[in-house]
Each structure stands twice: as C-alpha cells, then as structure tokens.
Length: 377
Image (cartoon, rainbow, N blue to C red; front, side, top):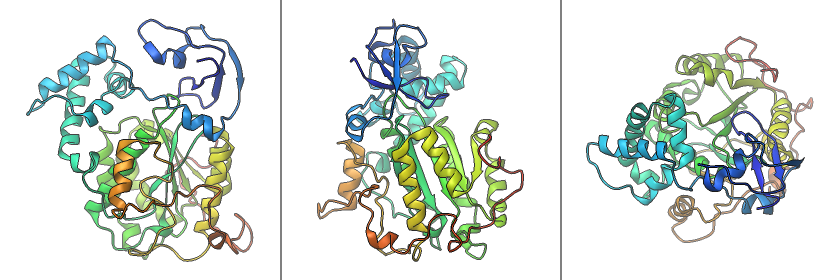
C-alpha cells in the first residue's frame, strides 16, 4: 500500500515512517513493509505524525500466517499442555507471529524452550479465560488504564496514586492489571509490539496503607513475567517522593536489567516532553491534560463515578475483547463515555494550576539511584 504508515524496528526506533511502496520480503508475507528498510527494498520519503483517522485505519496487527519456526513453537506448546485442545479464537489471536517471535527471541531461537514458555502462557490464559474471553470484568481498583496511543502505534498505560484509594482488593488489583495489559496488546498498531507506562506519583502518601503496600504490584510483576514478556518499551515514574523508595526497591528486586534500563524518573514537564518526542504531539497533549486534571480537585474513591473508562480510554475499533468489556461494564447498553483530549470537561480543568506553577507545589523528587534521574537514560 503506497504511503502506508509503519514503524521501523519498534524495539529501537520511534519514528513513524512514510514509505513509497509495499514490497515483498521472502518469508514475511504481508508484514514485509515493516521490515523493508532492513532489506533496503523501500525508499524512505519522510517522517510525519499521522492523523487520528489514518491511525485508526492503519491497524496492522500480526495476524498473518506463522512462519515455519513459529508454527513449530505453537505445535510444540500444544503438545505440552496437560489438556491438549485446539486453539480457541482468543488463543489464535494471541499465538500470532509477533507474539511467538517474542518467546523465540527470549530463548535465542531455541524452539523447544520457546514452546515450553508458550505452553505455560497458554495454560495461564486458560486458567484466566473468564477475564480474557472475557466473561466478567474486575472491580476496577484505580484509574489504571490505557490513556492514549503514540503516533508509532505504542499504547500508553497510565495510573495516578491520587486515584488509588484504600483499601485495595489484592485479587481485584491483579485482575484489573490483566485486563489493562490484555487491552494494551490488542491496542497496538502499525506493527508496534510494546507499550509505554507512566506511573504518576502525585497523591502518593506514606500514611496510606494501599500506597505503601508493594505486595499487589509484586504479584502483578510475577503474573506478567511470561504472559506479557518484553512488552515494556519505557516506564516513566513521575515526581516520586522520598517515601516511594520503599516501593521502588521492591520492584527493582523483581526486575531484570532490561526493565531497569527502560525506567526513568521525571517531572511532569519532562514526562510530557519525553512522550511528545517518542509518541507525537497528540500523546503528549493527552498526558499533559491528564496531569492537570489529576492535580485539580479531590481524588477518586470506590463507588464514585469515574472521569475515565477502564481498561482503555481509546475507542475499541470493534475489537471483540474491548467490545465485550464495555458491554459487561455497561449492562444497560448505555455507551460509556470515551475521554480524549478534546472531551475533557471544563469543570475538571477549571482552576487547574499549570504544571510547575507556584500554585501547584510539586512533590519532592527522589534523587536516590534506584531509577535513572531525568531523561538522559
């Protein structure tokens, strides 16, 4: 497709590239355009941010056929399951080329080892099919959700401690994360295989048991280690107070060197500048307005109407998982409001101080070496 928007090597680059023609690269099928630059078979003719309409139409999910090596991984995984059964429609969506290739890379091309990992993942997904089908939605525990999507197709997951009330239900917290991570994978576009994560520490309180308890997050990290392996592109921790070091140490103990290298600490202004640089003007603007709205008014409490939609603020584009979640969340079939940068209620932002202004005192930054400080990392 001439002019198709694609992301060249999403693991390392962030530019949305405009190519002049689609090309065929042996063994890659319809996804050839994504790797054309590696083979020098497509001419680079520009970089620009796509319009929202173009981005919504450019849904390049890795649903094309598996190559021989990836198919061997899937077949091997099915044989290893304690209760072998044909892949369901949901599992077929998961066992696509991009996902299987993650496990192959993680095992350095060792097909039997990748098959064992995929078998564990499939077994976990079958145990949690009620959430992944989905047949139910969790009791949402905070404002954790997909906030927006970068121009390169990478979703941005966000949550703010101000909207994390106490007490938290440990199981419901993990269920909440499962739904958001699943939605993030399904919301990737333009060949992206990873997401960005923003942890907003505004409202973090050492006196709040839910904030100081690292166990739910540790359970989430254990849960996500294999099912959502290598999905993190970057993690930005915004304005952490000194007391957040208790949480950061617990998370660092469970993180590998790759995850630690992708994590950085930033002020709200730095976080917006960083996301604008890697994700485009729209993503940066949505994050900036979200910071402003969360720094005005009271925090959210259980039972109150939310200013957001879990697990995602993005339109679901007809995705069956997100469509079912919306239906289960709104059994009366009343459409849930979709919040984006243009539909923020004026009342939310009324009187909201600008980020970094004297009327909006910032929480003291953590200057410990737990995470890299600033954006140089």
